[in-house]
Length: 78
Image (cartoon, rainbow, N blue to C red):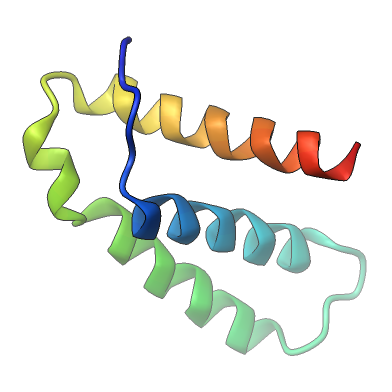
């Protein structure tokens, strides 16, 4: 899959989704209702983003977005 440019708002939404998911998956998370609502809101934003109408293979592009956001976070942590 050769997708080079994801919109910034899409990348930010995916990063926020990852962070929210990790917070919810942590042992004894605080305010789980708010975290679940945020995860749902971010899921909707990610799923219905207009960018997906412009790519030929949406499943591959979604996978690439998740991979790139995780890689960027790992690089920042290192």
